[in-house]
Length: 109
Image (tube, rainbow, N blue to C red; front, side, top):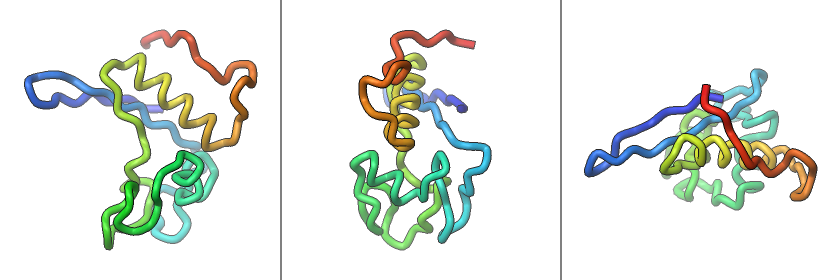
């Protein structure tokens, strides 16, 4: 997982935390994966429109993990980390209520 803070209008910051599997293919237009799942399927599991010109890729954009608009953006580092872990659980199909699924605390490193 990697996190990044970005300054937005008025000097406010927003954060995203990106989670991937070390075996993910992130730059292939035909074989990109996210957490071991084909990226378009991962988007569908997140309830996002993965058709060209939809929520995930612009019309004509390569359908790669690198270019996909999948990762949640939040106001704090903590919220971004929690959202990334929830994304991981949803993409991997971990059912709600599974022990460890809901994160209640995150420690900054």
